[in-house]
Image (cartoon, rainbow, N blue to C red; front, side, top):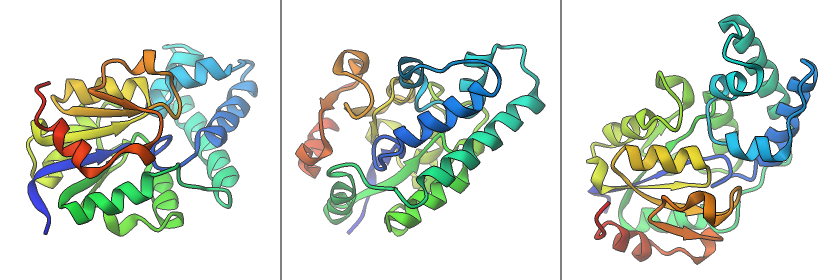
Length: 222
């Protein structure tokens, strides 16, 4: 039976789905066309943030809203084309989603990605019915590190922020979780431990995480 008082909010890219290589190539291509080279370090630093934030960071704050929209559309079409038939879950992610469901946690997806990507990935991995709520990047005014997406996910689930655990791989995502007043489990799929040190628990793979590990996190103060 689902417990209405505790929840896990999942990031998607880099936590559930192994999408980073396809995002990197898509961003590289779209910025290369505009005369800017994106390094892997640049990409990792910005991974997990919303498209408008990444575009302003790389191309400058003076870029017009119209150009931001054009860049985002190009990039996401490129990403979906690359990822469509190559999507794989990251180790332990889908198994943990299923075991948390059996254990009684409510679960939400809290992603910076546009809804088209969320739909593609959740359908391809056959996990769309495992979440009680989904929040995509377009549903909030500010992307990560703003806490708005995670707070909206908690609201949709009807769970207090202090009873939510966020699972993240991105620096901006960990910051967003802590700003939301939530607990955070970070997995080193994209960034090293040193970059994720704000998290309450850091693991190298979700294969090593059990529902009782997350249950015990709720007993710790923020």
